[in-house]
Length: 79
Image 1 (cartoon, helix red, strand yellow):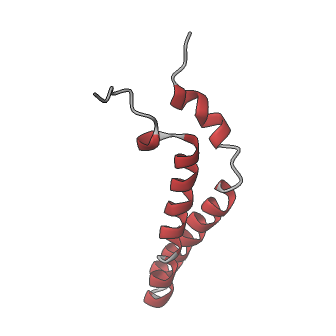
Image 2: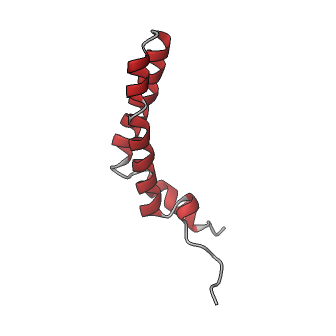
């Protein structure tokens, strides 16, 4: 059975060192927003939102390096 390129690249992408800070930023952002909302602290909730773009950028860098998702090479032929 022949696996597609994105399927082959996924396990190596999961070993990327950038995923650790990406997950930490994601957990800090989501946890801070949840904590701020449950304790009626708008400043904490809004401040924690600043972690989410960092997490998205780090996940995007990993995806770009490994050609996953929308960053995978296109099979369309250019004339």
